[in-house]
Image (cartoon, rainbow, N blue to C red; front, side):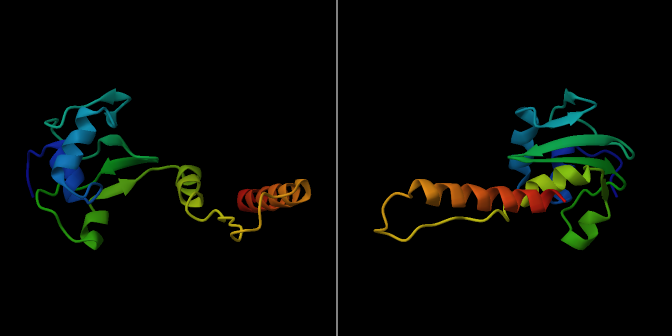
Amino acid sequence: MAEKLRIDKYLWSIRLFKTRSLATEACKAGRVKKDGTNIKPSYEVKIGEVYQVSKSIEKKTIKVIELLSQRVDAKKAVLAYEDLTPPEETAKFKSMFHAPVLTRDRGTGRPTKKDRRDIDDLNDSFFDLEEE
């Protein structure tokens, strides 16, 4: 265990970022925050602190439980932090990958007005079921 650990190295070691340089860039770009304020890559991590991390469209809130100076396997990495992300935020992110993809056969032309209404009804019913 390390007594002093940089935030970029910590985010890399718990596998939130694939490389340490990506974690550093995220800090510099303002996508890593503590209490709503941007933090630098050299910020010293302390046990019990809560951070907000934005990765593309995904937003995570994590609480530091253990300091890891080396990158470890995923099972051990999950034990080093507590995920405080609200469930609705996680569901919103996951639903983007499970939305139906509507395709039309080549050569069938543009959808008619009736086809368009059917497609809209199908989309509406899918998203209504997901919210329940």
